Length: 169
Image 1 (tube, one colour):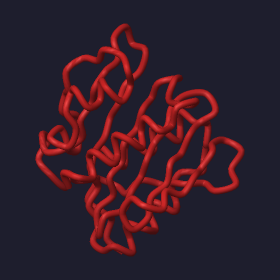
Image 2: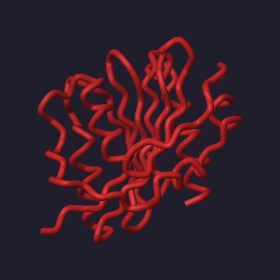
Image 3: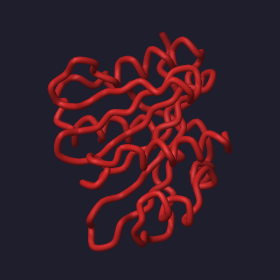
């Protein structure tokens, strides 16, 4: 099987699971990932105003990050919002990837299915920091990750951003 072409979304997901404490539960990333889109493409998915509104606090301007992702930082190192799109060779591989990233029944995180976003979507909320949303759209996976303590008790922030970003895919 050929490895998927990855953007920051895959890296974000693995980072979220590490933050959540899911040691060893994430799928092994493929060797030598290659970007699926130009480095600035994901930054068009969410605006500064949308992210700031969802979080309810000031944020720093967007920065393009490796593999086509985008990052908004919360001042004073309090956290960050990052997102990206991962392209797979098929829709079934994209769905399998999301299922592997969402450790249902794990003690590390709370995993919830989202029924009205893409073909398959989940939220993953860690016990100590952050919430991620992974959503499959055909052969692509949109990942929105909020690495900020407030996202634990308000996972809807990540879902709001995922819905807004999905409208621009």
